Amino acid sequence: AVAADSSRLATFRSAAGLRAKGGAVRIHGISKSFGTLKVLDNIELNLTAGSVTAIIGPSGSGKSTLLRSINHLERVDSGFISVDGELVGYTQKGEVLYELKEKDILKRRTDIGMVFQSFNLFPHLTVLENLIEAPIQVRGVSREAAVAFAQELLARVGLGDKIDAYPRQLSGGQQQRVAIARALALRPKVLLFDEPTSALDPELVGEVLDVIKELARTGTTLVIVTHEIGFAREVADTVVFMEGGHVIEAGAPAQILNDARHPRTREFLAKVL
Ligand code: ADP
Ligand code: MG
Image (cartoon, rainbow, N blue to C red):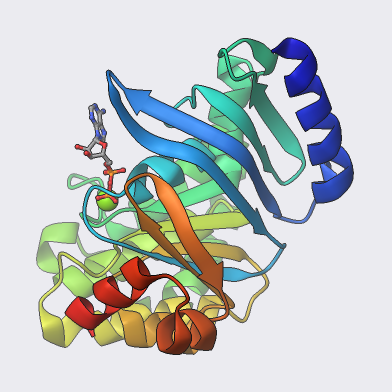
């Protein structure tokens, strides 16, 4: 099995460009189970640097687990993941081929931003403090530089006037925009969004999607798990449909959303559109 996996790795290296930099994400044959439940089953994905990928699919299909695996919040059982040229890889038996050390994982995570459904701001910190904490603590940026960049980011998400507010004083949409600015404060090459608008009142969804739309122009690789099909159509380069731990199909938005090949994709879209 190791020999077979080595040849898989060789294929992966040559075909996918293992050390692709600039925020590329390469996923080759990853699987992950929780107990007897196979949540990711031999997933293949190839996201070029600066691309925007929307992942859609029913609840429980493995979307969050996939994002968490890219961010090293979950360790996959087998397969290869390369993010911005950094590789982890396990054989089909789960033997380690390439693994990051714990401290490198923590460092990697700061290059891979993640925005969650539930904002996850520090409630006891002001907006400014939320934005400068990690750059100062994790990156050793000077306070002055961190504050200047935080001001710039807050202006970009339209919240320049909320710099001294506490999260509880903000609407859900504003909190999520702060959460996005906070992720950007670490200048990530890859930014993952896990249903960033699902916890918002409908009238607040647009302002958050607009911020993400802006980001799509900046060259950061974006992966967005979303139920907002219209947004996926407008912003994504690639739409990925997942079900039951499988990537059922992936392609250009028009192809997947208007002309899906797989009946399961069509069934799902018929329900959500
Ligand atoms: P999605 O984001 O598409 O809704 P998830 O990746 O969250 O799907 O979950 C996929 C499946 O894995 C679900 O059946 C979920 O209950 C299960 N699951 C997720 N995380 C865990 C965990 N830590 N332990 C056990 N089961 C889990
Ligand atoms: Mg999820």
